[in-house]
Image (cartoon, rainbow, N blue to C red; front, top):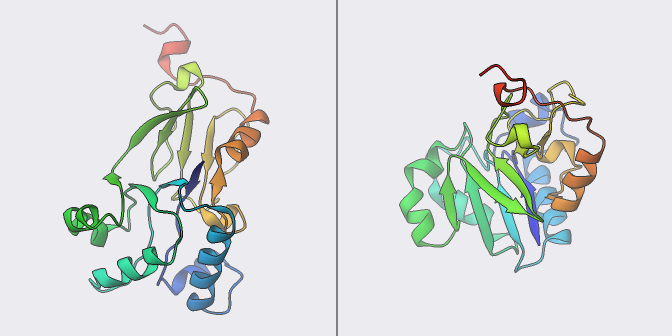
Length: 190
């Protein structure tokens, strides 16, 4: 099974205030995210993680290993976020040690015949948007105004009660959209 998530912000004490996260301490938040994740994700499932795993670690790459080791899911495909300098800097090592299966800036995948563009930040339009592909992203911490006409979804943890999101949940979310293409391919400009 595939899962999607982003924006854990492990080790980032200010995120409790910025996002009004319902935890007394950053340690409590870290623990609860791991517990909720392991509650639903099985070891052989695959996670598409869309950035901002941890920050404020002062170059301590061992903390990335420590946090990652607590998750029972073996297969992580990582899309880099804007707070992932430590992961970018240590990409070769993290891949060699199989902490992550891949580390990319952007991905395009198909699941259940649905094309999805995976990125940390949302797009106004994306590859295949004019044909109904979905943009699955993080970054915004569910602060974007909902757009009933756009086929994009924020999978950041704070919008999903600190759980990862399944393809089925994303599909259910998209069923409530009234898609209207926004790019030039659909309006006959060219």
